[in-house]
Length: 410
Image (cartoon, rainbow, N blue to C red; front, side, top):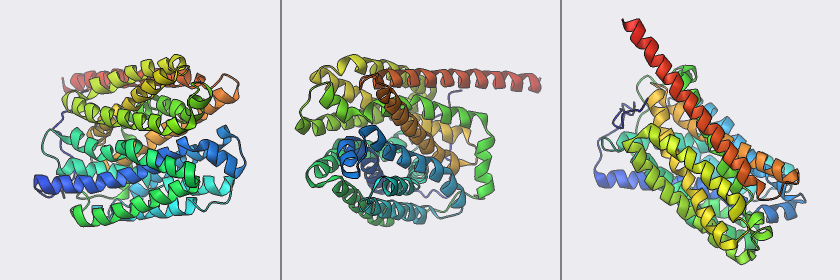
């Protein structure tokens, strides 16, 4: 069941590049991830401002988070299949252009419905961008370092929560939440320029076509891996989607201190991403199972730590470390997808944003039912345990399949 860390990336067009050129390409891809990460997570820290401006409750404003996530869920498979034959760099630039336009348009949304529709549209290129960026980075990486290469790209997303989200949250609190989306759009424009300049002009894998990409959907282990992401990772979003009102209402934290806690969350994400990618290169499946178990413990603890500002802040740092599962699941999908790499890589982020939508929704349901802001910790822990159950199912299925293959061979 454990995939070899040196398995091929299935991208026949990968050129040989120097270490400097590799780092420049990964940096450009990471800046795109930085833009997307800032745009995705900053809204979670501005829900009270959004709710007040468009005339809704905070849980209703949380629908904006779900709308973006659903855009990723829809856009990742559709765009990955339709653009299977595109050259890598051209597609990356086009996807980032879509994201920039979506954020500028979101900043001008007049109300609840238009904002939800625009956030849905902005989410469409998200999954395909990250999936393609991961494929490019893995193809350019030295042998045995695929997960770390993917982790470097994801470092843009996790780094966004450490730097981009607090800056955008500050802009949102002082200049209105719309200024935060303008900021994100500008970063996306910078990423377009860097990708065009520093990412090699790679052709798609030989024989790439929409029909071949759809072949990923016929593979059982692809669905298991997506299920782990969609369910097990939802716990983090159940807690973090409502972190600002929880800190203010339960922890008694003054509003000016909230951006520092958001930065702690980002530091946790950076830490988890770096550690998780290294562990995944050593033992892929043990990393996935271990992070799911860790997630259940950390999220359950938030139910108790939220009553103290210092303890809650440290716990939010630990919640950030749960992204350690991301590079491992990305590599796992590459290993089980066969020659349908683009769709499988994009679907990873589709699944993560299903987790985003599921976690934010279930967290809102618990709060709306009168269970209190801290109930999101229990919701998150239960989702992590459910993801661990899917992981166990995947292991059992793989072992059963292996036995059938051995019997057939005899």
